[in-house]
Length: 136
Image (cartoon, rainbow, N blue to C red):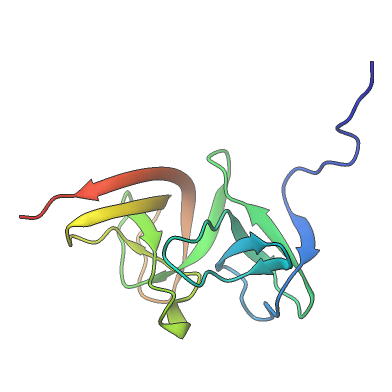
């Protein structure tokens, strides 16, 4: 029997990246050139930066089996669904925010497992669900 899984890893991995120095606790996406922060709300961001570097960074994949700490935009309560903050605001790139009340469909990436305030690294767990907020 051939084992083709000999060079795979679980947990934190190190990959080529854009300059992610000081970006620990933010969401990251994987592109053809390496890791980077999201540029659009629709970017898939399956990683959390653990140790950002200039050309290589360590990231932890988001999965339901493990908690992560991720920076939030605005306040959240334990149990709140979290989606991507608007990456067009440079200071919010890679952060999560509480699910808005504005009508629309949102990609919920995590659920808060503790309350948090703006700029805090909140304990969260991957959730990965699409949620539609109806207009009131």
